[in-house]
Amino acid sequence: MIHLMLFEAEHYEKKEGNFVHCLLCPRNCVIQSGNLGNCKARKNIDGTLYALGYNRFTSVHDDPIEKKPVYHYKPGSTTMSFGTAGCNLHCAHCQNWSISQISAESNNLITITPQNAIEITGKNNCETIAYTYNEPLINWEWIRDTGKLAHEHGYGNILVSNGLINKKPLEEIIPIIDAVNIDIKAFTEDFYKEVTTFPGLKHIKRNVIRMWEEGIHVELTMLLIPTYNDNPSEIEAFSKWVLESMNSKVPVHFSRFYPHYKMQHVPPTPVETILNARKIAEAAGLKYVYTGNLPYSEINTTYCQNCEATLVERVHYNVKIQELGKDGNCRKCGEHSDFRL
Image (cartoon, rainbow, N blue to C red):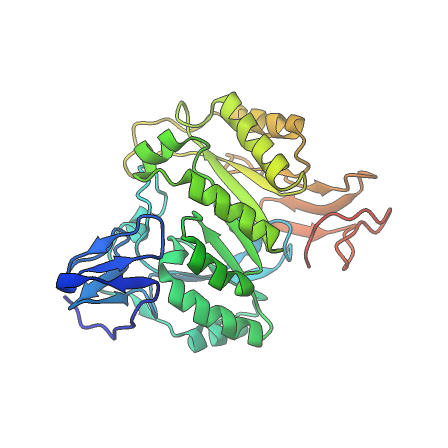
């Protein structure tokens, strides 16, 4: 094992025999001394649980905010993105498996403190910090500390997550999160159980609704995989849930699957499947439905729902603010569009 500066985790209980019970996410791991939790980012050392990802990162990059993807929060801006190691899901199709499926004990991770993150964000002229790439919530303590510091310096916080977290830690972190994109892997528990290794959909749905109720800007992404989660009835059920649990203006992104990790045998999603998913969601009543990972520079322009003026034009990551006012409303007719600038 490499030498680490250890940072004690929160949200756990000590048990007899030097066991600990991690309470961060619904997996609720009971961990023997010397062992890692399921996420490979929290470790029991002599009866104390440590957050191994604190200050330790695999990936740092300034990204277009649309790459997260986040379309209706600070469109056209750049976000400073940080990713560490590990994940509490183990998706067979993971695109970032080289960092999400390794331990936070791994060599060659970059040391970045919360203060370093603020400095890096400023030097790169970013408006926000994005916690992303692997599952960020397993590094809960660093997000809490960095997020508070970010707000003090006028930066927004964006969470790009699978949404699998327990109620108490979620409530504690809600005040520092400004926008989220939650990756809805599928809309059945069977998919979660078989493909991600944990049937967590009910927890994720609860958390999405809770964040939306608290005023966090919410966007949702679903990667459509041929024969696994691309059934039109499932897409319709997902779309109706968004409409009925939140509202018609929650942005939804349907993305095309490409073979990755343990799903090399599955072909890429047909382009028509993605375009059809968009039609299904719009027919269900959703106003802002976007597409991703298509083999051409797709146009995901946002139009005013009242007068059809072009609010934000997007061609790939080239973004032009047109008739979207600084108040988030259409400059032509005044229609409120739920953008946050």
